[in-house]
Length: 303
Ligand code: TXA
Ligand code: MG
Image (cartoon, rainbow, N blue to C red; front, top):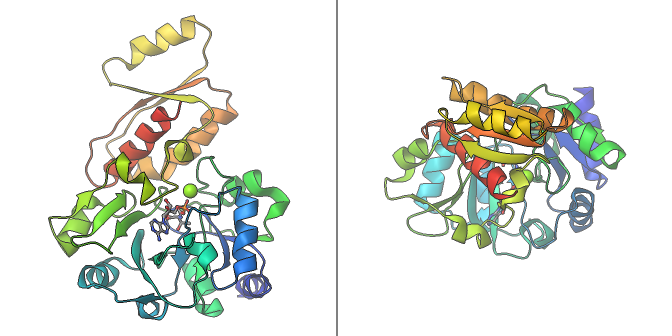
């Protein structure tokens, strides 16, 4: 594919390439090139101490870029890759300090998107990529979102259509026994426990130091997000509208997958519509519902 070859050339030259994954679009740089990764942080507006995920082409690459991979990490990689799951493991040689914020661990994932996999296979090195939005904005789930945020600061945007899942990957820290879920996301908590043990917990907000970057405002639109119940949403909307507020509703459907797919596009649309308040009703917390509720709570906490 001509497009993929051009993207690989750019990565080799230290450039920035935005690419689709099944979760959200990533802003990619060569994870073995310190200058490229530093440039990535500058464009993203992200503090250099926050680690970014390194994307790899296949499960075999795990042992090339990580060391002392524990059994639960291997089981999760075998069961869930390619897929919306990031494994934090001990860092091997090759991945530069700028990717991990100087830590001795690295977050690795094999994304489940044909264009991302073609890019990674052709490049044959890990691609460091945070979500392709400006720091503190909602993650992009279309190429248009990426262009709206990053404009000419990105050398190329590979357009793979809207992201199938729509929320970021689940992050599991496999450097502890048992492992700990640092961020809920595209792979359900139920699946992680089935594969790697029922004892696996979900870290609370006190663990934000362990997954820096999972802060509230990372998932918030400009509008204030308020969590309400299905019973009170209509009364609250009437009350807010009476004070002149522009209000947008965000209510769950019966389909968590469809709701996750649309979540960030809806939050962006609320901002585009000049909304002051997004009234959100939380979904049931099973499957992808857990990640949707997590992002909405964080967004609400940020206001
Ligand atoms: O779905 C996703 O994960 C997307 C796509 C592009 O792959 N990426 C993404 O990246 O959400 P970002 O940078 O927005 O979030 C990466 C998260 C951060 O919360 C960071 O703290 C955590 O991964 N992380 C990365 N490396 C880590 C490490 N070594 N230890 C702990 N947390 C790490
Ligand atoms: Mg992000």
